[in-house]
Length: 446
Image (cartoon, rainbow, N blue to C red; front, side):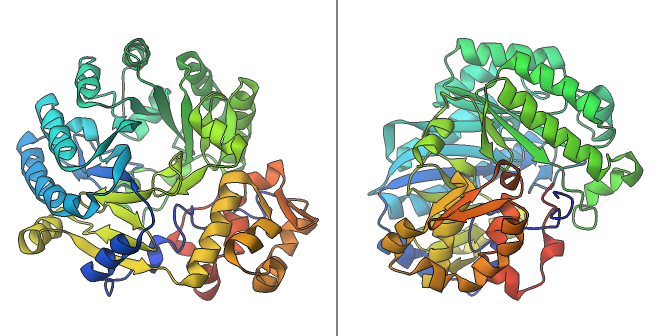
């Protein structure tokens, strides 16, 4: 059944998705959205694009270099953007910050402390918040954790992908297993509130047996959260992926088996399956909020920050402010040129209409909680669910027939198997997806 539905589709970190952004969206549109936003809490996303080595599977926005002075130049431009944007958010309190990339720990300790000092000098940070950073364990010393703690980070996410050496060599990401265990142990000893491990299934030379060994090593690490991503092989779109030979990739059946055993292994070990690619220990904030029906989702994935505006800073970063999305210039040279000319780097975006806002609420509810109460949606949005979504509910019939979705007493409930296909189910409510044949621009679901 999963093979039947294993077609391409969005990950719904936003609705509408980034494919709907266009360059008619202006700085004035963004300023209006900030002015009209009802939020007083802010999440910051800082994009650091640099990596010392190229991982062949990667589809992120990145710059491969070993020249540290390039990071100095980038920080200069990023600082200008921060100083330009911060006054627009003076009435906000920053409750969350995440540094992604690229490799944020490409920056040396001095650069990290300089940048965090500038950010804290220009934004109002709450006394308590989630401040996280992605860490590449190949290129740092254990002392980097001391720097991150001094800078105010309280959560780290370590990119592991796979512990198998053959897989690591095939994707150009060899790493020291013992160092990862030492890094994790030190982070816990230092009092980092949360640790996350990133894994990828579907990489070359992976098999269900080899990935099971990796999962056991991960359980030995005992992270608070886990992200287990499906490798999207799109060599026509990402040139580095052409170094990965198709014949070395696991079959769709093997990938499905890896996913199945991952879910069984982690839930059997006490982790809560948050959905999509994410797992968390039951006492983790993500797990608690999901059980309470208060989990949210944005461009950073599942998040604990309720109705919080998101400001993206740096090349290619995306903001979600009130009823709009806005994205910075995607490539570093145009980003620099825009900062020189305008002081900001806005490239494109979109303003949501009433229908977008309604569908965003429905898709977010389903993808975060796997259930929906039509009566509550009626009350919240001032609609009659069955009338408004008459066409969408017809599209859901195939999922109902296959017992992946149940609708009883105006309650939509997604079955455990249906949760693996939540992206497909959300597509039923995606008007843009229906109007345009765009499947080829997305990764497969499994």
